Image 1: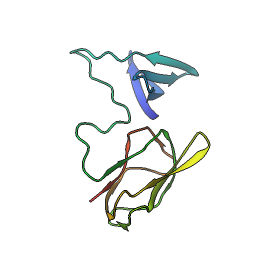
Image 2: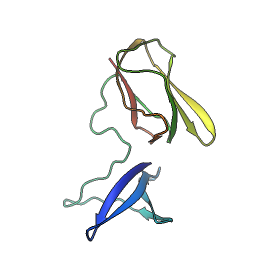
Image 3: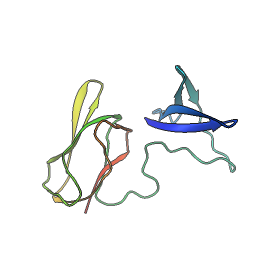
Image 4: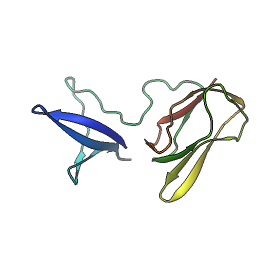
Length: 127
């Protein structure tokens, strides 16, 4: 889920948005939930919340499910071994460990402790 600011008629609205498994967009605003069927046209951009755009870089590790990051155990430059816990995500009251798929060095860490992540969102990139 992502927090964004939407400006309508000059007034700013703080909302949360997420994509459903069916490809619809849910918008949480003012205590209400709105579901939008995404049908981009030539004048409207496609909304790709929580998705890595374009080709996925080799060494990119993504969140396998939506949740909240409870721990980030690495930083750029760290050497990691296959199976090492990089990030922990809690989803549906269960903690999930994101493991290094191979030995390598951490190039980039995008996950932030206590932040929401969406399925497919990049959390760590290995060299």
